[in-house]
Image (cartoon, rainbow, N blue to C red; front, top):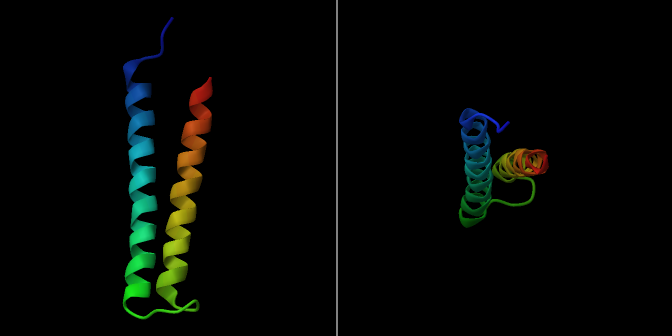
Length: 67
């Protein structure tokens, strides 16, 4: 018995949102450094949080699809 199509759509959308969050984090970091931000700037730390969340979610989404 195959899985319903909605599971495949859910997994695809989850991966897309994880990639978008990861891209937002990278963009925040690049913009922060472009405007002269340093290692203690809030933009860097916020960007790192987004990168961590996006990468973690993408990892979990890809790891969970091996079943």
